[in-house]
Length: 215
Image (cartoon, rainbow, N blue to C red):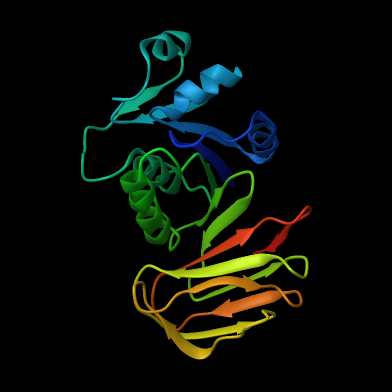
């Protein structure tokens, strides 16, 4: 069974240190289009390059001439969504995504939508050097040091939200983008649990020195 895939997108590059750490945990390394340029710059070889391939540089294609490259011309999905779709079809249970934010805000928003969409099919985490972003689903639990900052981001109307372990608890409450969000909350005790009756809710947290996530 495929377990964990790492997707490198064409946004703000992660540090080489973070990327190397995540690669040790991954069973497959996939570059979403221009993410391959970052991999080439760091001297890292992907198992697959996928996307509409409009951002990958000629030198990168030459360097990775023996790496399978799958061109998907569909303009109704981002390159990250194409990579997530491939990983889900291949049966990966966990997908880590780096480089999903930065540069173009419209792409970042599209990637958030993809995170919510595919979180129903696999555990997907957007990671950078300072934070992690995951889909809550109906419930999510994690450990974090007291004082860790977390935010709950509703992509749709989210109802019946109950939290435990946060300084400002939500007790069967609703969040909706443009109406009410829950930003800069603080971990009071671990484990932190979040339950949602209905809606697409994302959890953003600043990573502690030794974060430990419970599946």
